[in-house]
Image 1 (cartoon, rainbow, N blue to C red):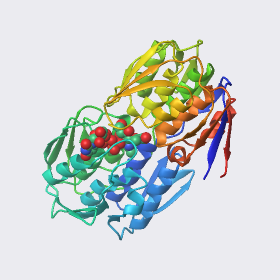
Image 2: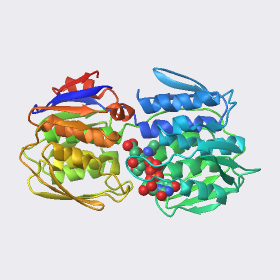
Image 3: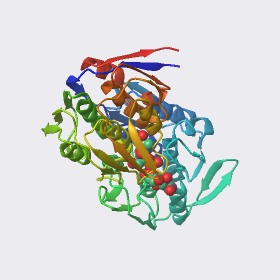
Length: 416
Ligand code: EPU
């Protein structure tokens, strides 16, 4: 199994190009099932999760090619099942449920089960589909959905759910009548998906607000679009500059989508300047400790909590970090402690007392963002850190060691 060896202590300087967002590309790929024919997406990152979604679509009969742009041809869909083997490796597979029901009125999707960051049920997706007239049965670990027709409905999500909003928005595009989603997710990835659906002929209003109105149409046709920049990758590199005491220019990304992270970094004493498609970050010595609470967009993203915690481990002062989205997203805490961090856990709150230095140690990656936090800790630590199970990183960070090496990090992937 591959691992990363990181020799810490070098400030990062230079330019990093931010890739397309995985959490935008995945729903777009699922959306191809709604309209028969050739779809085309630019700026799709080369990541394991993208490969998994291609494999899932191939299982259903779609043909895809990722040479420059990603092309997906859904002319010959023959299987309406998302099998356990694929859903268990990537929960976003559940995004095919809405499109399949919309287009074919039938779908069989493995229940995802728990994962390293929490229970993560899909009950809100299923409840909303039932409101739209879908019969949902649970058979041998699979959700089996069937509907003679999908009908528009007034749906209020009890909790903000990103893929839930995306799934139901897709299902509603071909339903009879109007669907109104309240307490909808406002993430930029939801807006990008809505724009793509509109490009295909859907009628959607309000994406980006907490109320989305979808008027069903008879048919959609394939279209093309660009994947938006990965705001979590951008946030991770901002934190990388801050934690190493360096300076980076991030290109191909906009400040708007990372504003909550930028604000916390400014509060911590980091300098950040920006233009229409770049961000420049410069550390000013040791960061000040600041508190964060994760919230749905536009609040501070849960997907940046672990990385920000890594930064706070060497902050000047005490930082209180509250995780409101996932109940178990603190798996990185014990690993950061192996590197000398001083963190006290109390339910969904972590109290981080800044130390002067972290020290390199063998650590284990447990999920995607936890892995990123260990890379950040390692870049700042004295000595060598060995990060095991880095396949998590390959799910969501394109060319991470190449990008980091190019700006001065001493990082190497080794086998075994
Ligand atoms: N929830 C339910 N029932 C549901 C759906 C959600 O109880 O039916 C709960 C979840 O358990 C969680 C909260 O609602 O406590 C929010 O979960 P959400 O549904 O928004 O998460 P998701 O859609 O499964 C997406 C991202 C995650 C990101 C979260 C939160 C994709 C493909 N995944 O997941 O990304 O953390 O939103 O922003 O968009 C990552 O990239 O590392 C990642 C985990």
